[in-house]
Image (cartoon, rainbow, N blue to C red; front, side, top):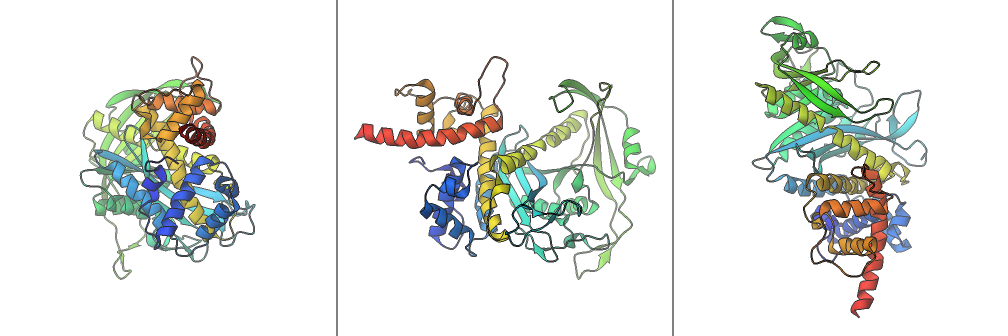
Length: 475
């Protein structure tokens, strides 16, 4: 890598692994994996000695997954400093290793009929309201089973979650654990807003947010019983009875079977109280049950007006612990929730860009250590791409090392003469995408992440050649 501090040193240099040599190995592994994210571990490492060192690292019980992701979290928190608001976006991904029967310690995923084996991963990503990913705040990994253990909070995860069990013993506790981690790691002066999809619509999650004084925005999945100024009712009917406070126009990109379109969205909002479910939950003290209290929240509903025939209208019903007193307040909450798709992009990069389901290691613990490194590699590329879109005129040194931009410039422009100033972020990323097959024709728009990913691997090969040529020229 470059002579200056590498990205891997920034992300992992403070990892507390009990031995400086292990930290150095982690940094080197990250650099190798980032240079060839598609490649197998032996291909990425290059030599048998490096490959054996990688396998030894993953086999080392002294290496804790929490230490690997914790070092990166520290770098993420550093990037959050100075931001007024940061969105902590949570979601879950299921990694399928059914075709790797020799890997020990995996657990069931999917349905019983599918009979699949793998790992469960719950990730919280920090994103600015304008859409720039800052890194990962929390990572939980576990294999389902009778005594599966989550690597983040070290709590037992039962295979079955009957309603009678307290939330602390259910897999859905992942939402609460991630919320607590986000709040705990919040830098001074920064407001964290936890953003989650429908799976997080759990009364205990919202109740826990109130206990932490946490700011959350979730998409409602259940038509709960609620109390409003009009009396008792159901959630959807109560919000629909509220007046339309304004209309938003949003552009919807083309999806499978649906062309791109401009959608008109009506916005309603109201304050209400969620009535707790009839079941009991533990108080958290001596395991004694308690009756949950009614929970004050604000509800924001966006409903598409006159969608095209045969098209399912957009309908988001959001619940938030943050006051919504005006139409702009409601629009802001909607805009925050719209950034939730960033974590879906991240999972696509992680699963398909890094080919993590192709990694073959003997045990689930070894696999988790490997996945922890690839998580940060995927986060790096995603951040690079969106940063270039949000700050296109900034210097490319924000994401590229000196060797990287110089090798890129000389190859694309077929010259050995370097400019006095590095290119901009936008220009450099378009050149990287060009290496990945991006044509840059009029009307092509900006390159996609996968195209940049392919170009990134070619760039790393060019950097190696550039260093050799530059050294020989200097001599």
